[in-house]
Length: 220
Image (tube, rainbow, N blue to C red; front, side, top):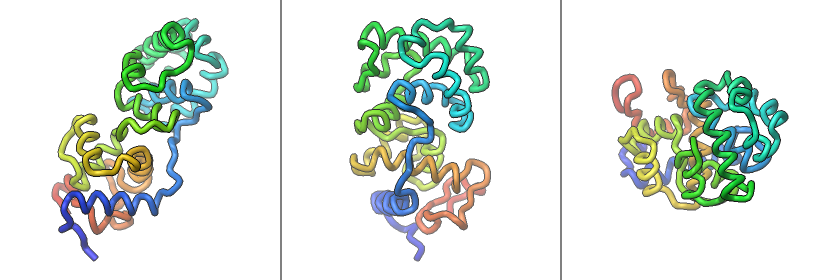
């Protein structure tokens, strides 16, 4: 049954339910052993695929296994270790400085508060939401990456391009209890089905509720 006539709140509920059935075990695909490793991996994932990050981080964590080790690292050495993730100079500088601040201000323990996390170099609200949600189970908001933003716009749940505006739109539509899982499920859907260039609309679990905004130049 075609349900594109649902209002935005009804559409959001239907999308949430369909994603829950389709991706019940969705998890963060960045390999990590603790919140610090998750923070590092998430910073590295900016303009880089999770697959590439997961190829880089095992060696990185072997060289610098703890926050203290990275705080004492030579930035040039870290640059070389993360070169293939792109923007490696900015990322290396931010990670070393973040490690130093975690050591100096938080006793070497990653803080579990939004304000403290976003005070670290290279850590914006999206990264902080990932660390809080996946690393600590703290619901701080919906983390909006390129997949979540794209699908939010295609389904008509947001018209914004700025990730934080998209996040606010989505957070107003979904129950707080769904915020972490919705982001993880949407990311999986974006990777598997709703790609940027060639979305597989005919195979999509949202086919009957998605407005297809911007797909083939028009709404469905």
